[in-house]
Length: 248
Image 1: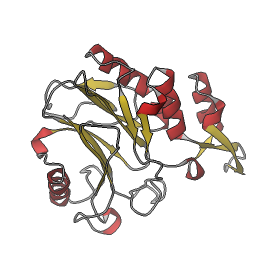
Image 2: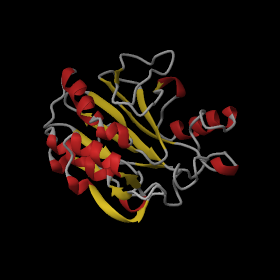
Image 3: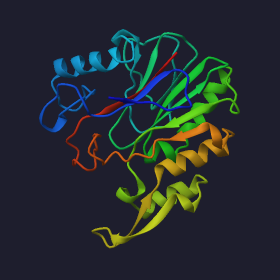
Image 4: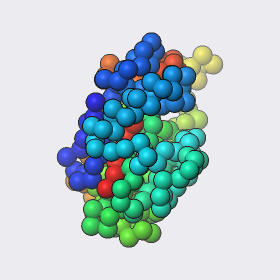
């Protein structure tokens, strides 16, 4: 149900689809109420998943994710999900959550400062350097880049992720290295070249670039198109969502 990173000391986990009560295309532990699954089933799935981490639903900070580079600083659990794709807090007792089904979830912690964060890193957020914005907000709350521990959870691997030339150009404009891409043998329907994007490598590179030590970055290495996970691309948009969560 939950996978954890050996680096993080805070309560945390990256969920998969195993367990839960959802059926059909959402079969298993779907944790999103925004994809067409029965709300009552999703709420029970959430209760089961949170109980495994000794957490309660009322502790959860959810976001309305829009593939932006916006970071929300949580002083408490908001009444409504804020529009953002990363969340940072120095508060105890609340749980920061990111929903994914191919995009990369990244959890961060400075245990000394008592600051944690969770970020949703699809290609748009990654190209927009959302992790840089997230770390800057952590530093504002007292964190240090040299103390931050980062965990990059399961997401779509480069071999399964073809993108167009305009995506490559966007990353290069934002300073990412060409090593984040590999040219594909395939062509788009319009006849343009396609590339394989390594989002995990791009986010790891960015974390190192902004000062997080390499030894303090853990990468799951699991591809979300594998059987235990929900995958938007593999399932042609009809699928559930996983949670990545961190709390202190």
